[in-house]
Image 1: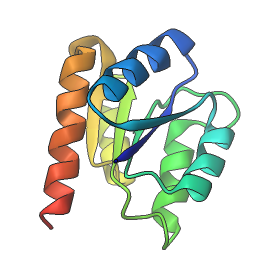
Image 2 (image 1 turned 180 degrees about the vertical axis):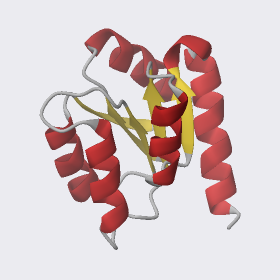
Image 3 (image 1 turned 135 degrees about the horizontal axis):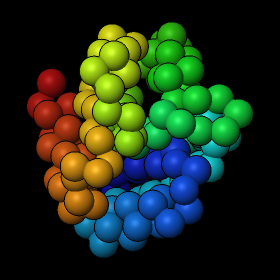
Length: 126
């Protein structure tokens, strides 16, 4: 079973995405801030990370940078899942190594799950 880590400080959203992913057969872990998220990444080494950018303690960009710097973790696919839609933020996220940048308002939870599946499938084919 593929393990997904959701790093999201909005409990309503993390619960909604968790429920959807669990229904699709994924194992889900949740972290409520960047610091806890990075600890969980190191401990559980998830198959994919859904990462918000605006987070308490450490923001998503910093979590992303830390993951990509770590040789054991750098190949974990990361989808930035955020409401920040400025071109500069999107470019920053992708240049730091995010595999995908999803603006929450533009994607339903079902579409997010489809993106997760698609990304895991392409990683398995590499």
